[in-house]
Image (spheres, rainbow, N blue to C red):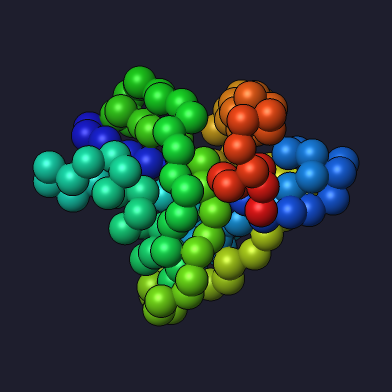
Length: 147
C-alpha cells in the first residue's frame, strides 16, 4: 500500500497531559467528518518518509516542520508507516482549505468518537514520544524537549 507518515508536533504545555509538559498539534479533517487527527499522509511516488512528513505537515497546518526525528515505524495492511517527532516552525501558508477545518494543540486526546482513527495505538505512540523526550533531556535542549 505504500509509505505513510504521522507527525507529532509538540510545544510546551501542562505537566499532566499525554506527553507531560507538552501539547501536541492535531488537525480537524473535513473529509473525515470534521474529526481530529495527527498531521500526516501518504508519500508521493519515490518521496522519502521525511520529505513526505514535511510536505504533509505543511499542507495540513501551513507551518514548516522543524527538528523532525524518526521515533517509530509501523508495518501492516496500511503500508509502511513512519512516525516523526518535531515542532511547528514558521507559518508559510494556509492549510488546505478543502481538507482541514482547524489546527489546534491538545494536552490530551479528544474523545475517541472525535478522532479520525479511533483505533490507532495512541498509547504506544505517546509512550514512544515520552521515551524519546526522556532520552533527549540530558543530551540537548535544542529539539522538541527544549522548546
